[in-house]
Amino acid sequence: MSPQQVAHKQGMTRKLLFAAAWLSLLFTTFLPPTMAASGKGPLVLAAASLQESMNAAADAWAARGHVRPVLSFAGSSALARQIKAGAPADLFISADEDWMNDVERTGFVRPGSRADLAGNRLVLVAPAGQPVRLRIGRDMPIARALGDSRLAMADPDSVPAGKYGKAALTALGVWPTVSAKVARADNVRGALALVERGAVRLGVVYETDARASKQVRVVGRFPAGSHAPIRYPLARLKVSTHRDAEGFRQFLLSGTGRAILARYGFTAP
Image (cartoon, rainbow, N blue to C red; front, side, top):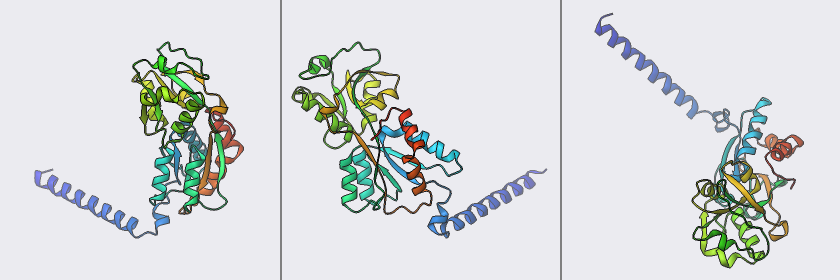
């Protein structure tokens, strides 16, 4: 084939590809919104600590012949702000009741769809290779254990894991000794990452986060009475239009869904 014929063939190929792309764009643009998005599953905004368990639940749901849900993880406070800013999500799973209350109070939750999905525990962790020993209790010498290092926590002013942690440390009488040493993270997985990297000597995370990492070890568990019960409320949002949203919500609340969560260390709500 001559160079001219090759060039002509390449030009025709480019024109065909351009035409196909243009037709695809037109087809997508002028479809009704629900049809254009039919290839995607419902959008689930979930607390960062739910990453492994929610991915497993989404896989199990897809194995039943449904389109796999789209999962987005962040701190509950950040997710609540996204919802109130108009995020087109279907389900919201918060790591505490306060942020779900906030979203519900401002009118974004579909009535009758809210339910408690799971519970959790709060633990103190250290890098796996560091021999930190500390018995969690009233007036424990946590500041001494930290030395010149810092305590990793999700933001104690807004993020659930940080709020639970501050409450526990306050109840045990040691918050004033560590408040100036807190390394604040945007969410609990950010706090976990600081401990994993050895950037800090200790961190406060959920027990499920500690179980998900081989790079940290649990120093001790905070007493249940030192903080409010850790509950993960689930709700469908008013803006939800996906046909699978309600089905996936009910699946998460079913015996099968709760068993998946239990496998990753979550407790009954």
